[in-house]
Image (cartoon, rainbow, N blue to C red; front, side, top):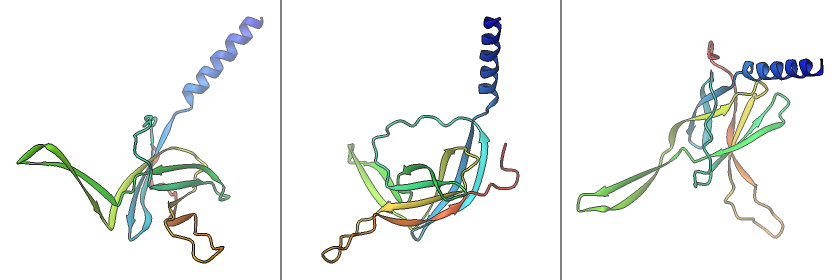
Length: 157
């Protein structure tokens, strides 16, 4: 009897694991004049790939917040307003050069695992300000704005 109960529990847990479909939240965002805005949000079936350590430190960070304003997750991305171009010149084909261009208006996509309790993202950069005065502390971060996560009509697949 114990063996039967154990087998039924294992089958139930396996079925529940397969029934809980993984979903991805795609956020189409824009960083313009130092402020992040949301263009659209779509949820679709799937699992995020592990990006691992890409070797490049994030430059823009975000806090994921629930309806009560509590942080339920954090993350970071490269600054979408900084474009890096690598190229070679015809007379020096073995010398790779890189050009960094700062743009004032950059569209980008942020992919996150879907969470039903995610209501808002707050974007920020670390502050580069120096303290003024004897006891003044600089702000720890510079806000790039908050976006409410509102799914587009018919966006959940």
